[in-house]
Image 1 (cartoon, rainbow, N blue to C red):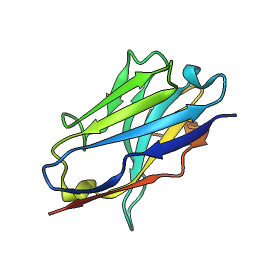
Image 2 (image 1 turned 90 degrees about the vertical axis):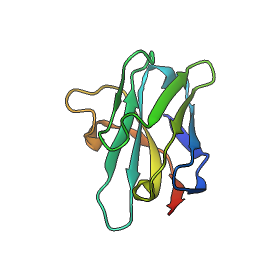
Image 3 (image 1 turned 180 degrees about the vertical axis):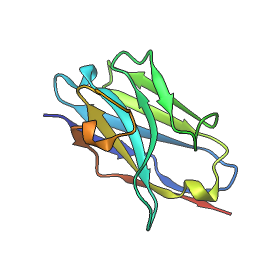
Image 4 (image 1 turned 120 degrees about the vertical axis):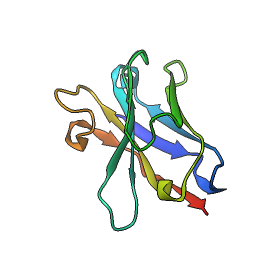
Length: 125
């Protein structure tokens, strides 16, 4: 069993930065792929980023590519998403997710076994 807890959301002005963190519990959590998704009101869930268990491979969604950086610290069982140049369209609830294996597209939420409760990010214009 893996439990995920997100933190770091909040209100920021357009152009600003936020750092989101996700801390995992569970003995085998370091072997999981760790990802971030987001969901804005009235919209479908959107893939943001995923990193492999070792942290050596990371994929970003097109909407955040070039503005976000994900890092992983398996010793602390945590991943961090640094988000820069934030835009009002980045406003959403951001979720952390963990996958034991991804057999297809990384943006398919069905591959993710565990999800956090989400943290709100609001970007004002």
